[in-house]
Length: 402
Image (cartoon, rainbow, N blue to C red; front, side, top):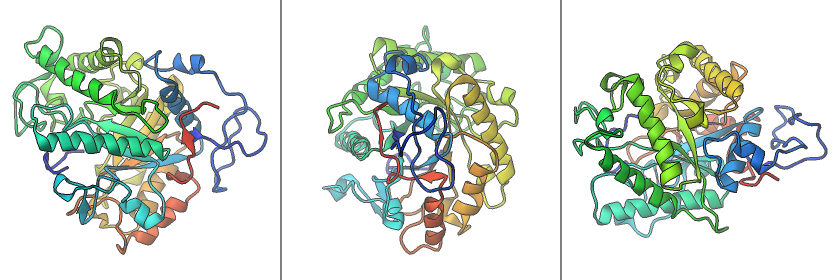
């Protein structure tokens, strides 16, 4: 998402319902939970599919459960779901904060299945009491989401590490990618930022005493020009090298083993070749995705969006990856049936396997999911009740293979 403000922006132990044949999921449309195939691979086998061959048991199970669920279901996600909503927010001046509140839950009776967060205030170039608060609430939101069975994904609107300014190119037009790669003048600055992320990741401990798995999605929407890592501001080779270094340094040097790695351009592609133009390689990516707001607007095209989701899904199936619609939404829901007549249709038009679809954050002044009493409330409930969609009340535990 192209965030408009920096400071204030603040599956599933799938229930086995009776005997089932190998690889035969529960029929779509019955409203029940997904059924895991009877023969489940062991952890060692699943780890061979991952970027991190030493991934924690819970992280490994998360990948597998998402892979299974995506055959018949799509999990619904919401950015900052329990951090803020329309007309309310958990901020430092509102302590103590209430992480049980959620616009999604208030409307549908259930939390989302996927919770979006951001490393924006965790790895940056500022400090102070407010930033300490931001780290604490990010930690608490992620841990509580895990404790209730949800899935956590973090993007990273990373301030320009050369200028120490905005992540937006127009606000801080300083080339950075080549300078933070190994051998660059700001490489140590970048390594320090990754250390901050790694240290934070080690503090995410659930009620079960386990590290909370994270789907980490760095350097997203790189096919646009609005971020300093965008297409116009670095070569394809340098972008790939940056992503590859990020993964290997976190995994191999800093010992982070509770991450799955996601990669997602914006929607500027129509073929697989265009989609993969800046792909860092299968050895560095667990989940392929797409952010798509433009095709999902009132005057957009459901079919165009669906075709792009098919490209992503087909690649994920071919290469044994996960796929997702990593960001989407219609701000302020100016089309009151957007959830059933745009999002749901885009997800269903083609035969796809998507782990999740996530909409952007509600704030006191704007929203992407309806609040209680909004005209889209009944449509959102209808969307939630569709058998193809899973919210937090249906996913069970994501973090054990068996």
